[in-house]
Length: 253
Image (cartoon, rainbow, N blue to C red; front, side, top):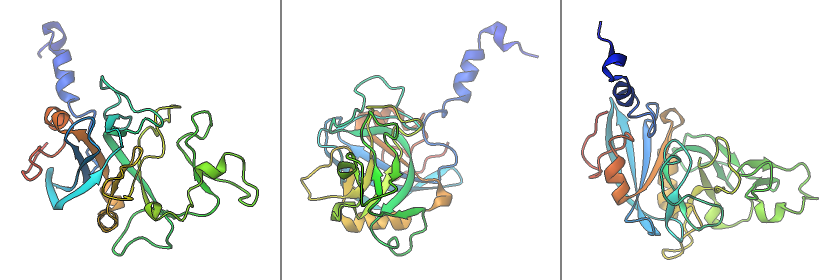
């Protein structure tokens, strides 16, 4: 029997076995990929991929999207939290880069767009998403007990604004497990307000495009979101188990 420890090969074996330890997990069968030209880009594109038998296949054309008004910074999710460089912070105007799970969909409507099959919640006048780093509920969905007499913080953090841009909010689980105060909160896909009006840190797109994404999502697909500048994507696509940079070739891992 070979003594790998004596030969000094054990660390190399561990590295090889954990090459995909950070990145897209094996149970993720649906992947949304956001491509940004560079760290300071507010514009980019979103592509949808389905994994079958270990192979990523793109579905549909690329979708024009807007990222944070100041570009991107490393976030905290399935991958990205251990990277050196600029880190996502509350109110920095940057979208979190990395790989993240997709959470629930929050909507003003009684139902999601046609063909949808994904966990959702119809937002009420009692619902809020807490973005105060000093709150024990920071970066969490909460429901207050008495919306007729709300606490002082509620007005600025309530979710029911009757704002068309928030008709659908698809949760991007950045800084969620656990939430670190000040590292960024309330990150979603939502409807853009205009072609030149980037959000504070979310990823936004035209209404019809977001409806299409929502109709495509499936709970059984355990969908994830990867957002990276082009140069970082070139470096990390293999070790993070992502589709190849071309976006059209098959990738097996």
